[in-house]
Length: 319
Image (cartoon, rainbow, N blue to C red; front, side):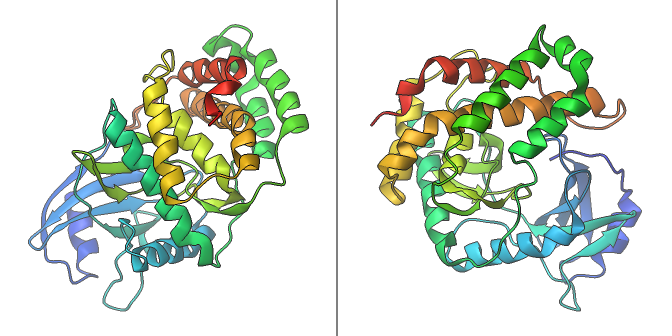
């Protein structure tokens, strides 16, 4: 979450008149994240999230996200559906952007996950995958391996090497390796593809919300496990791996959904891909984010450290 588009209180107040949600009490921009503009809205009835879609979100994909969230909510997964206005419309326009008013979920995002919290997160991911088995929607992964090469070119040798000396050469070598080794025949489904700790809400050791589905797509299901592993099992700067958190996350997932032997064997390569994907998108955002944007930029080197770890330690995924 972030704020790129500034929306006044008066504009938000007028926007809310389209809905049966009460009148505006307060609105606060949310700086975390890098993708869309988000505001925490409090009305006389409840709290909501107002999201204005920026950058990588294609408005044509919004019906997919809406259907996915509605499907998960119907299966009792803790997700925040978009709210329909008085005319039954969920996709809106505000300040020249597509926008949605979204259900607010309680809970906080943990910054240093405990073993119990990691197991709960893995279980929530497994439960979500189970609920999506009969979801018929499809969406191409716009952050697939082809896009990674495009990001390398858009960052450029100078941009990447400024982030870390020699990085341009390193990522091109890794891309060549992943092209040869990628386990493309593993089972596919719709996945979250971005289940970082800040996209899981928790109260103590219980998951109360899965949020921010705007990278959700059709792809290798175990890749979702790899992304979540890379996001949860390291220190914030990526320099320290927590084996106990890793074991708990995988155990929670296996208890709720399971991993085949082929999927587990593919995880070392998928994890390298996950680390490279977020290294590149962070590098791109670091280079191209406007200086006046209310947004928390994230250091790409945190995922370079993860990539190096996965390259050297494929055995961590062995059951």
